Structure formats: C-alpha cells, structure tokens
Amino acid sequence: MTTTVPERTDRGPLTTDELAARIARDIPAGSYVNLGIGQPTRIAEHLSPDAGIVLHTENGMLGMGPAATGDEVDTDLTNAGKVPVTELPGAAYFHHADSFAMMRGGHLDVCVLGAFQVSHHGDLANWHTGDPDAIPAVGGAMDLAVGARRVLVMMKLFTRDGAPKLVPACTYPLTGPGCVHRVYTDYGVFAVGPDGVRVLETYGITVAELEERLSVGVLT
Amino acid sequence: MTTTIAATTDEAVTGIEDGSTVLVGGFGLAGMPFDLVDALIRQGATDLTVVSNNAGNGDVGLAALLKAGRVRKVICSFPRQSDSYVFDDLYRAGRVDLEVVPQGTLAERMRAAGAGIGAFYSPVGVGTPLAEGKETREIDGRVHVLEYPIRGDVALISAHRADTMGNLVYRKTARNFGPVMATAATTVVAQVTDIVPAGKIDPETVVTPGIHIDRLVRAEARRLTVQGAR
Image 1 (cartoon, rainbow over the protein chains, first blue to last red):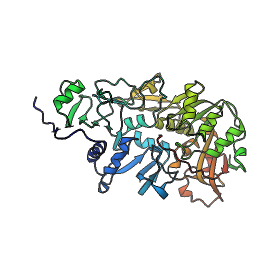
Image 2: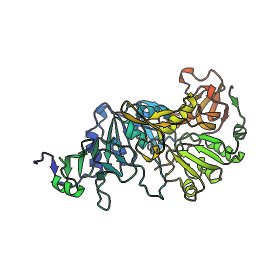
Image 3: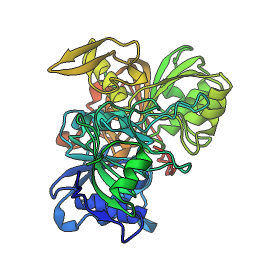
Image 4: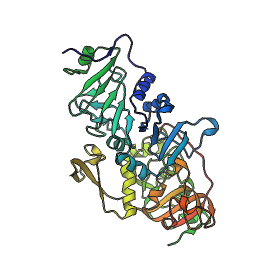
C-alpha cells in the first residue's frame, strides 16, 4: 500500500518542547482543557493567548494561569501537581465534587495525559506499573480518562530499553479501557481506537521502520 | 444543632473516639487543617480510619498523625508523593492499610453520604483493578460500577473565614474537599483564620452553610507548599 503519511525524515524525533507545541496546535480554540501532571503541563506554554482556551485543574479551578513566581506564590493556589500557580481574569473556583462532576459529566473538551502504555485500541495504563513493591496511587487519572470528551496522550514512544509503549494490549493495570483518541510521541502521532492504530505523521523515522519497531503489520 | 465556637483547638476536638473514621480536608497542604490535626494528636484518639486525598506530606499535618501511630487505615486517591515518606515507611512495614479510590469517586462517595444517597453508579474505574469485585451495571450502553458512600464520624476541615453562624467561605484552591467533607460527617469541625459576626459575610457568597458546621475554632493560617506531588 502506498502511504500518504507525512514522514519527516529530514529531522530527528521531536524534543519534549516540540512535542508540547505539536499537541498545542491540535487543541481547538475555545476549548476547556485539563493538562495532566508532568510533561503535559508544558503544553500551556504553547497555547496561543488568542485561542481563548481555558485550563481546568482538578483541585477546583477554571482559568488557571502560569506557574507563580516570587511574590505571586500563594499556598492556597496550586495546580494538581501542588505547584503554586496564578489565576487569570475570569477564573472560577469550586469544590472537588463539582470539579469531578464537571469532568465525569462530559463538560471538559480535552485532556492530555502521560502514559506508561497505550494499546492500539485506546486502552490507557498510566497509574501503576503492577510492581508489587510500588505503592498504588491513582489521583484523578481514571476520572480524567473516562470523563474528558477527547483524551490525548503525550509520551515517548519507547522506554529507555527500547520497548514500545504503544502496544497491542497493555501489560500494566489499566487506567481506563478504550478511552484514548490520539497518541502524540517523539517519533510520530497515532490515532487509536476500536479500529486499531493508524500513524498520522512521523518524525525522524519512516513508517516502514515504525512498523518494524512497533511489530505491527500496517500502520496506515 | 447550631454551631459552637471553641476557644482552643483542643476543645474543638474533644470526644473523638478510638476507631473513628476521620475525614481530613486538604489537597496536599492547601486546605489541610494543621491545627486540628495537631490537636487530634494531643487528644490521643487512635485506631483511626483517615479519609483524605493524600497520605501526608513531610512531617506535618496528616503525616504527623500517621507518625504518631494513630492511623489504622488510609482511604485516599494519591498516597505516593515526593515527600510522603512517613506513610511510605508505615505501608511497607505493613503497619497501615490502604484503600485507593479515584479522586472524583472519593469526592462523590462523600458527597453521597452528605446528600443521603444510598449508592451510585459511575463509569470511572470500570475495567481496572479498582473496580474488581464491585457490582456493575450497563446503563445507556456504558458499563458503570456501584460505589457506596463514605461517611465520617468526624470531619476536620480548614476554611478561610466564618461567621458566628458557622457559614464558611474558602480561599482559592484551598477549598478542595472542605465543602464536601463538611456535609459527610456526624461531627464537623472547621478551623478558620477569622470569625466575624453574623451578617458580615454576604449570604450570596457563603460556600458551606452553617448547618453543616458543629464546631468552629480560630487558627492562624500556615503557608506551606510542597512540589512534585498530586
């Protein structure tokens, strides 16, 4: 089959910042968005102020602004990672049950989460490695995965050992089954779902190489 | 019953019995009722089940209660944090039980308790280890899991300001679990930085109506932060 997937082999894989910027481009203007703890937080730096995107933080706020610095730090105002943040004009505060009702009720347009593994059918594993010594901690990950209307994952495509994190079936305990719509990685962007996985664009690698490294038949 | 104003935090926590389920407000350190937790440690109740979003940070608040050996079980969404070493050690030594609950389900289970709801079906957690053994039902083509209320014998919360009727307003994201926990326990104790005469809080801005608050005590705000947790 001839592929029409854009292959950016003139460059290497995306850096974390480039990946954040790539995801930011796919977030529609006017969306209500929750950016997960860790790398997804960096997407905020790439959202155009003109796009009117409103950030939700699950600890009870819409209209979250950038991280607080110096005198702005207020210990009563943090994001979900407990990092002090600021409020933008038009911000609103609410309690935890309302915050998660907002999520579960389908009012949040987009969330971006990190992941240990995503399956070709959109299953998400991002809370527990299953290691018997690990202390399980889920936070709001399951609520976000199930509640947001569109769930995007931001992750590296391979572990440090080179194992794919985009897999036929997750081996780690699930956060949510069939909840992920799109997976943004350093090597490429993928659509996942009931029909399986499709590659949408690649960075620093060809589709054929990707198929080999991911051990999948056809990615397009 | 109407709200009573305690002169000290020690007076505010009298009567908490061994074996109680205690709801402790806060998300990390924001909204954590530090002074009430310290008073609970002095009060001496033990064998407690603590319901809170996290399992303590550093050596203060909930971590101090855990360190004092008063907690049998923690029900929370996110125990593991960069500075949850007190809990981590107790858990690994098998000295504290843990029930992990998705954060929104934790809030909603307490909301249900406070709202007189017998149980509710939620899509969150379906297909994961946290729904194992729970009753499920398909509603509108989507599988839901049955979740039961979490009710406290006592709730310890922190708010910004109260009036003498017990009406509360909170400050920014320190609101978090406070308004929900205030509805979900038999005895609700709130620490606030300021208590003003009735009529001095605009009724339109009240977040927690005084009907939910049993005891009120004034305590200075503590400004503590932690990073790298959730």
